[in-house]
Image 1: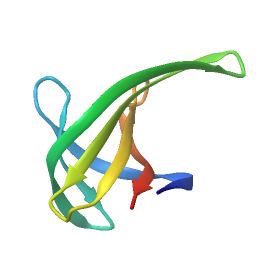
Image 2 (image 1 turned 180 degrees about the vertical axis):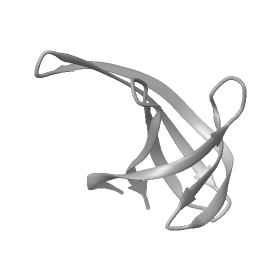
Image 3 (image 1 turned 135 degrees about the vertical axis):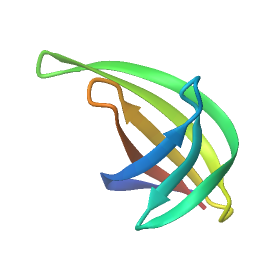
Image 4 (image 1 turned 120 degrees about the horizontal axis):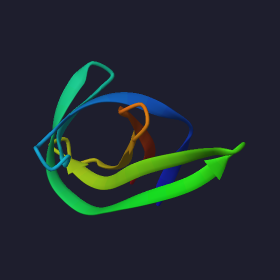
Length: 84
């Protein structure tokens, strides 16, 4: 079962040279990414503006599985879904 967040939560994410997440900080707590299950990109149009996001489904050192994404125009990372 997965819980989609009503409003995506901003994260601090460190990545490797390929842009793959290595760790993330949520609520002030740093979690290491222990596994990347999959990644995908979406390109959508919203009010005439193109929105590109790079998504990753990751497992963290706390054993949690998240869907996170990087908003490509801004470079900001967000948490969008928590898998239980």
